[in-house]
Length: 121
Picture 1: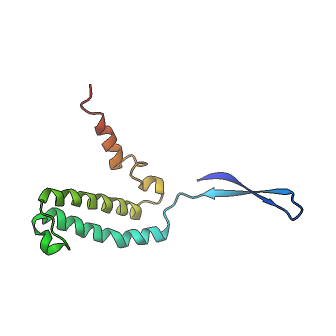
Picture 2: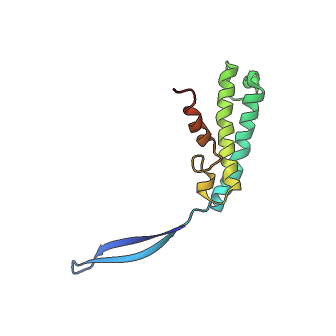
């Protein structure tokens, strides 16, 4: 949490400019509404992951459209798994910085960036 001054500039009826200073405290906590929405969305993402990754050949029966290639189904499932991971982090973390994919020491984006430099001379 940090303190940041804000200035409000407005004109009075005589045309003189007035400046009003106020302090605002920036808060980094995850709101209850966000936690509730995350709890609502996460099960749908988990169900989509299970259907597409565990049963990639049965998309005609289990999904609203057919995905012909099993590899396409599994790649789409990995995107759902990533979304599920993100929303579960929103439920378990108290601060946005800790829950974000790039701000955490254990986040997957950090590991992906480390992997980009592998194999280069």
